[in-house]
Length: 303
Image (tube, rainbow, N blue to C red; front, side, top):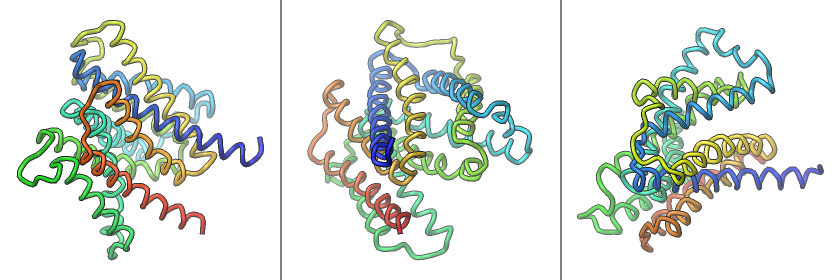
């Protein structure tokens, strides 16, 4: 395959992964609000299954080296903390945010994560933010303000819990992104994320055993659970990794911004979630911050 074909394939896979993540969010909302499935159970099942299959894929790719991460004491604690803090927190906070609001709002709020990372990097490097970083922060704050108040300071259009868990999921996304950097420099991504998911899922099984299911389990539930676990997690993550390999992490992350858009469209058309023009402007402002940060990184990467 020529270079153009490889790049196009990479773009297509990144967009497909983003679409699958967005649709998965709508499926999660349906399971919570229509079938009474608790977030704790779905998070545990999702992580256990996806982590196991990812590690199986990694084993076929790299053999027994998939276990090397446990041989080093420092790496052992890093992968455990990634599973317990990074992976588990980003999954759980996002799911709970959906439960208290909807897939569109929760996904858009979680996408504040890259802005939090930009602020953190400025503090860590002890430097003043550049103009594009200030612009991104202002757009993010404006977006959140419009999304949760519709421009009226004296009232919220979403519940306090939805706002709390949505913002918390953004911080969790920032931790999830930054925490495994050194591990990813040393081990394949399928190995790191696979062990992170599996350790987080096993730990969460003590909170909500996967064999104790609450809510309504019927054909519709099983289909949505299957989509969340297989398409929205396993396949989406795997093809996104392949896209990163073909087009680079910056461009793949830029295309991943299609996730909140797909989550919003599915929530509107399938779940009849009300979305006003204020919500659209707020959501667009937040997505614009990610585009701004990603495009700037892309220019730096290309130069």
